[in-house]
Length: 330
Image (cartoon, rainbow, N blue to C red):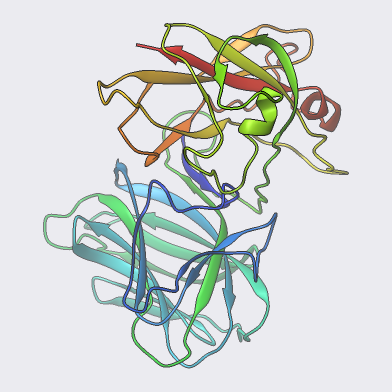
């Protein structure tokens, strides 16, 4: 698979990202959201950065909400701190990459969500930057998109430059590279939501922090650190939970994954793996994730595009019967 990044901020935190705000009030917000409960808010002079494995070609999707048009908003693709190109957004969309520029014709207004998709190919002769606005071609450039020796991008950068009252929100992010047979082109429209534990299943081998049902100790959004938790010190112990009904209707489900926040209280590099179990099937485990001594690790399980029981696309009934949990590793 070639989905490099999926994010809807539904865990209620910005763990795993590099963020900065001069005024300290950017970050996760429930005030505006395209899907689910949360989005990421960038206020005056705030910055949001996500590091990726270096790619020379990619497709990025992001939902955007501008609460005003007082200043420009930007999406950069970069190599380290070196800018390769950018999209500038205000009441129109503008591309600038290595001196190649284009301006879209659509008029963007404040106070509503819109979907932006960007295709970037970095090359000194056949380079491309294309933008779709609400799924429709908006503007593009082609030619030499290679800046200096920076033949690939390793981070996506969302800066919000200083201007009074200027702010925007981002949500429902997806990023594909061009490798493999799937997820190798435009992401298309997408909505990211979360389903939390609401029941205990089996096994329940981890030690609860309080004498209550285990699922009640791992269902907070955002996660509450050492206030409620389950823990284990023996390798390959598991806790498995039933998940709440997803509440979805007539949708196409393109992927699922598990996500958690965890720490290693011994600070000795211990690991966990996240698990899903579809009805009638076996456990599917993600890779081992090394923990640190704080809850600063974004633990991700295996991304699954199809139900492993029948190798068919996920259906709402499949999701409603899904279980998930965690396994201790060493």
